[in-house]
Image (cartoon, rainbow, N blue to C red; front, side):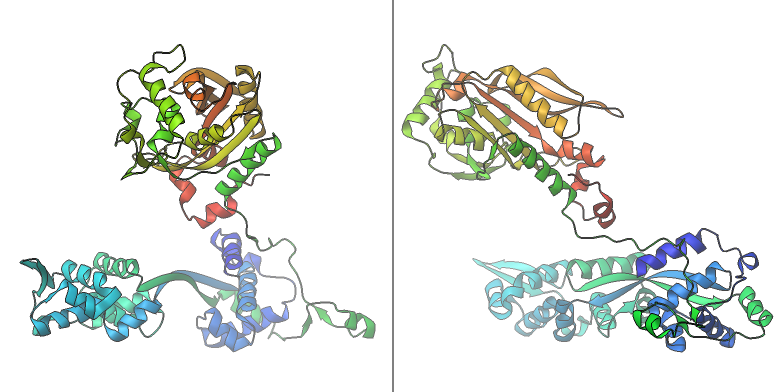
Length: 539
């Protein structure tokens, strides 16, 4: 109901639509309105919805709705204030009772005049990392190496080891949910002087340690207005008469509704907005892409995120000295593994790189090194998956696609992240041509809602001819969304494919930004509840 209260407040009060006497109701007050108005008159004080509910016997939701209706008529005034409350987590409650790990570890060190890391591990188990980390951060201990052993030596004596401010805050909050202002007063009264910024720092620290969490609540105070008091006087007292809020079959059958008063309803009030559960907008976009390609007769395939350099680069005829293979572009795992391919296939790829194999090609020259192909990495594209599938299905027809995560060493900014999704696809069949490739891509983008598409010549190491796909947006012009082409024979020949292979790799993140109206790709992964509720749907 809180959302409805905010909506009513914005609509009728905060926007200045309640101007006072000119809005006084000329009709008879409803029973609940009369009861609340009479309660507000008593002692002329201010009430919150809990105390007003207790006074009138009306539940809190209904009493607040009634107050908004009275405020609309100018008979009462509503003031609101957003307050932040803090409470301990389950872990925080345990530490408030037993002491923080670093505090207990400090006493342990003082008792022994220092201890090894292993001794601390034996004494504190899973908490040892937390204890050592915060002992060092708080300068309560230092590490000293004695031979092969690492010792933690306390830097303060027992008399100096009074409670820290973070520990005091845990104690102040341990009694239950504590309002921010109340917490600040407790800290001040204890003799601890903190600026607002310093208090925020300690609260953020406790929150990051999962010891304290917070929530906000809008507190409202309701008071009778001068117009409300005049209304009571002008009516020479207000009587409270029971009303019928719902016409039931029993009332109709017995006729007991006759002569009774019915509760008034304002049909102009907006209804409560409902936010049903739904799939994340980005996931809905991915599902839509899957559905489009499935309807076009494609089959989805999957593959491992960790690939060998052989399938990620070598089999795609990317030279072993290509800049894209360097550490600054690729996440290598500092490990090697035997290439998962037949010796015959590996030998054909080797010959293709060195001298062009059996084709009329010069290859890249030099020596192809098997150990470089055995290096493991996080795949930089999903083409490694589709090519591996093609190698095991060399006979036509093949129509497959893959939507999955890829990884590249990118500096994070509004248009780049190091982990993103890519849409990859291939068509292998007798007689397919470059025109078939363009038609397939045009059909996909048309179904995605982009009627204006163009293709520009491009370059990719493993396709020829190659194109870049662009779509037109009225507010942004032409935007490049991916690359495509026909696999070079240097790629298809070693894996035993004798027919043309149409291939494409499309960036999903940029397409998602356009479809969802975003300017920062990082927003796709932010837990913004308002954006999640209002983001457009995809059918």
